[in-house]
Image 1 (cartoon, rainbow, N blue to C red):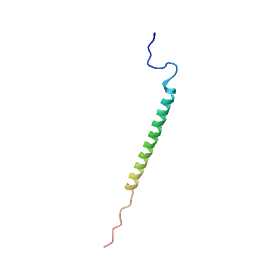
Image 2 (image 1 turned 180 degrees about the vertical axis):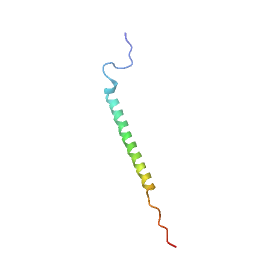
Image 3 (image 1 turned 90 degrees about the horizontal axis):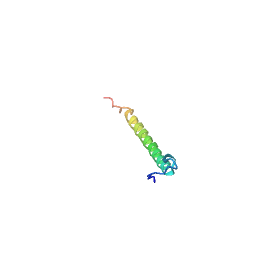
Image 4 (image 1 turned 135 degrees about the vertical axis):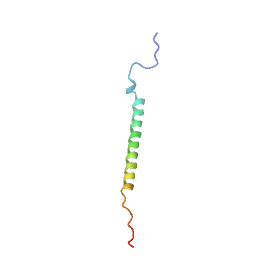
Amino acid sequence: MELSCYDQSGSIFASPAFLNLTAVFIILAAFAVAQLIAMSRADSLVQFQPAPIQPAN
C-alpha cells in the first residue's frame, strides 16, 4: 500500500487553481510596475520644473 499526499496523475503546474493564482500575481505585478512608472514620471516632472521668475529691481 502506497501512501501519497499528492495526485500523481497530473502536474500541479497544469491545475486550474495554480493557473488562476499565477494570473492574479501577473496582474498584480503589472499594476505594481505601472504604479512605479507613474511615480517615477511624477518625480521627474517635479525635478524639471523651471525656477520661478524673480522680479527685476
